[in-house]
Length: 323
Image 1 (cartoon, rainbow, N blue to C red):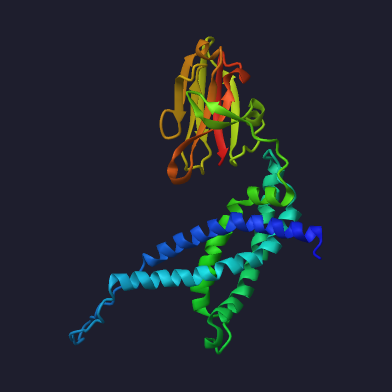
Image 2 (tube, rainbow, N blue to C red; image 1 turned 120 degrees about the vertical axis):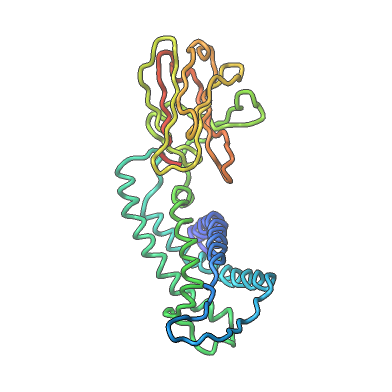
């Protein structure tokens, strides 16, 4: 009878598989589609001095439907071995995540340095496992037709299978590290509290505190937002938004009064600064942090009560450091 620890280990691996496999499959599909856009270069008859030119007969072009069908079949062949490959790397991935330690709610320089050392070790563990399991998987897929063993030095193996799978798997694992660490070590963060969005009561937002932003705690959707406060003219409140140099996705900060009416909206790529009368938020209201989610859709995510900030004569700068 399997032990409780073994059952817990399998449950952890299953949860990690549920997180990674869809993302890796999507990355594999995108990489495969990009590769299919580049066909073989068209062959032109050679020319040169003293060279005789003769009519060249080119083979007929395949129908577009046939080419598309062949591309789909090629993708399915690669996708067929993806699940066993991800299953093979999951147990050592869990061990690596356990060795790294539990995730922290805040970001600090020491954690960044640890992660810088950890990622190469992770890649060095996972990559050889992929190389070891792929030849055997392909041998099994083709069964009796494979009279000779598949070799790692086979160029087609690397170009058609190993390269695309590695290209899809590693970014998915690295980008999902905070979530994977939480799965392995258990999520010890405080429970999420929701509040209705001002003016749109049916929409629930994650409530955050001033402490979450001043101390750069990692928020529930993986974001790190720094809040800095500087003086502003008496009777006025100023709001600014900025983003890390590597940030590409849109961010926004909305200020509302106690009735849900919008007072200002600042955003990256637009008006990044706004000033308003402090009296408009002295009786209540909130600050809503927006971000671009999937397909670039502008989505409200977090709400911070304005009363937590003592807004009079203050300039609040919201710097989106991580997404």
